[in-house]
Structures are given as C-alpha cells and as structure tokens.
Image (cartoon, rainbow, N blue to C red; front, top):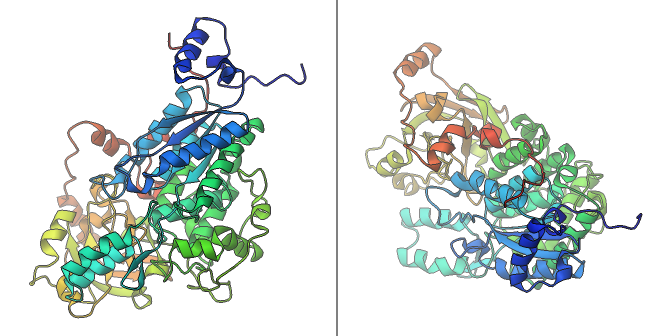
Length: 575
C-alpha cells in the first residue's frame, strides 16, 4: 500500500466503474485514447490563448504541441483547451475590459474539468495576468509558458520597436518630419515574425514578471518566439508540470509575499510597463497576499534600471536575450541584496539556484549596477489632492526636465473631446501646459484603455516640443514613453478630484517628492462638486456587470467578487 498511486483529482472523473466513470471515459475515447490513459497518471490541461485575432499568440498551436510532448515524456496525459484570447491590437474598446472575464474563463474551465495541473500559454498583454489570475483562484499546480517576443524590427538601417516607434513615427508625421508613405512602409518592418511586442512593453514586462515571480521556467521571458529554444523550453515545461503535480507544488506555494517583492524590484530594473502595477495588484488579491501601491513605491524607489530597452533605452528583446536575459538581471539584483534568493520557483529550486550560472554577454544591453541606465528606475507612486488613492509614473521613460513641473491645465473631458480638440489651432496650449484627460478609468471608459499617452498637438510638435506633462485616469501602452501620469485614483467617473479639474487650473507635479497637487481652493472644489453629475451607467450586458463590480486602479481593477482563492474542490456530478 505504501507504493500505491495517490488518488488524483482527475480520478474523480476517470477512476470509477459506475455510470459516471463510463460516461467520462467513453466520450474521451472518441479521441483515440487507450484504456491506460485513465490509469491515475497526472492529467495536465494546456490552457491555450491561441487566436488568429490575437496576432501575438497565433503560433501557439505549435507551442502547445511541444508542451504535450513534454507531458507525455514525463508520464502524464495532456489535454488542450481554449479560453478567451485578448488581442491588444484589435479588441475595442480595450482588451483590459475583458481581462477579468478571461480570468473567469480560465478559472472555471480549470475547476470544471478533470485536471491535476495546468500549463498556461500566454503572450499578448492581458493573456498573462488573466491566465495567472484564473489559475491562482483554483490553486492547482500550474506554470506559465510565454509565447516569446517578435524578432527586432528593422527599418532603414535602424532598430524599431513595437509600439514605441508607432508613437514616434506618428508624431513625426504630424510634425512634417516623415511622409505618410514612409509611415505605411514601416508597418511590415516592425512586425516581421511571430511573437508579441519586442520592446519592453506590457507583454514583455508580464513575461518577465511571471519569471520573477517564479511561476514560469527560468529563461522564459526573453527567448524570441521563432527561436528553437522557445520550443525546447515549452517541452521542458510539459515535463516540469508533471513534477509539480507529483510534488503537489501549487501557485500559493510560489506566489508569496517574497515573490511579489522580487517582481516589483525586477520591474524597476527592466524599465517595466506601468501596467504591471494593476496586474500584480489583482494577482496578489487572488492569492491573498497583501500588496498595495505603497509597496510598489517603497520597493522600487532605490532600484536602478539596468536593462537598456525601448521605450526607456535603445535595444529590444532579441538583444536582451542574447545579452543574458532576465536571469542575469536577477543575479545582479540578488548580488546587490535586492532580491529574496530563497523564494521558491516552479523549477523546484530557489531563485538563487535558478540564476546562479547567469552570465553577461553585453554590458550595454544589461548594464552593471554601477553604470545603470537610470539610477532610480522603479515606478513612482504619486499622491496629493488630485490623486488621494495614488497615481503612477514611469521615471525611466519620462523627461528629466519635467519631473518637477507646475503648469496650467488643458482639459479633455473624454477621449472623443481630446480627438476633436487637440489639433484646434486656437487651443490655448504651450510647452508648459499640463494635458488632462478624464473619464478613461476602469468605470469611465469603461476598461481603463491605453489612451493616457495622449499625442501632442501638431502645433507643439511643429515647434519642436516633444513632451509635456500628461495626466489621466487611463493606462498607457507599455511601449509608450513621456512624462505621463496614469491610473489616477479615484477616477473621474466615480467623482474623483480629477473630474473637477478645469482649463487653466494650476497643477504641480513633483516626482521626487511623490506629489501631484491641484492648486484650487477647497471651497471652489466643493462648489464644482455640487454641480458635477456622474455618467449614466451602461444599459445592460457584460459591460454593466463590469462597471458595477470593477475596483479602482489602486486595487488592481479586478472584480470585487473575484478576490481570493476559491480552490479546486471537485464539483458535483453532471449526470
């Protein structure tokens, strides 16, 4: 009896000789599975976010096959299943509107089926947090395999980065520095292979976050999508998930407070996307780990940015991989005493063991600590009467001259108002102005779209102005740059002070002091508040559910009813 196989969760479906067992096995046998497929071996789900409407993930069918091979080699049974795929570049009004929905899809699919463990295939921005949030809420053994970045973009002899050069080239066209024909020509030069954005945007950042958290295999983040080593890693991940099931290692064992602290510091070191803030806050809420904006500020404040990648620097993810990848970044931080080396990972080792052999092959791409790209590169959390619950700025992508700035507000009540007004020749705006965008937060847009990096008015660009302070309750693409204050909370749509800002109001930004202040008297704000009217709620459907239950950005913009882990209890019989 001591050598008997443990009764796995999947055996509640496949292990009986009753009518239910007959049903579960018989219908699976139409896939050509032999009897011993159901003998108690680990049943591994492959949660696939493949879709041709998600260009970043369109190569995932082959990636899934490599994971299956690994599972079979380790003695498991691999069963692939789809969930909602979130394509950042095509979904409107924003993929973020559906992150929580996709996490529910993942959670309920995992719990409802005869699975002992799951491999999550994710790539495009929201697919990584969505699958992790769903898996964490079930807490079956799980690991994530990223799809990998595209090859470097190349245009007229220069590197061009996903997103980063979209914003740059678009502004150049408006400034008269680039023709429309040249702009169109750059399209195919930027996206020239399978994979997600190859700048340090949200997709690359979240792949790095998964590796830093320990929920992805060492080396996962940076291998290009079309490099054969990406498929080799996927196959090893298939083997490793079986080991995690055999050792009963679950997300709750990996996603600890230490793991989140490591990830926050790694985010600063890589010049990571501001979107990591809302995603990690939401994920921490699923596993019950206390985490808030003050943790982001405290832990990231002294972290140098070491990774010289766009949008903060000059290189791209392909260069990052060849230079040593994320293991090297973590080794340098660990050697400086900035990481918890004893944090557990899905390798069944510690972070210290995972990165012990990391080497550097290019000190320009991954800088040493004594020669960082930015000395204090962590994301900064701002507070003040304009953002009582906090706002976020990325210092490594901002203009140093604007990090302490006071200017007059130019206000846009919505994204439509911005588009109608921004290029009005009579718009009263200059280089000292502060652009303010309202009603683009979780409830206001809804979905907190990536519109916070508002393009500058053409007349400023033609004067040679390349950056002004911009403030909103929106997010921005991780590939974007500029002195952009984001995630203002509470948002305008719920009556945050942002809703009360008017043209001409004086706003003070002081990043070093972590200050964001509206210089308007309390009495005047009270008068404006008395006149303010909240926006009408959506009529019905999913968007109504979203607006009714989404939390503010400082809490991760998750649904209030999804926080916490609901576990992997076997549901009651279906027949």
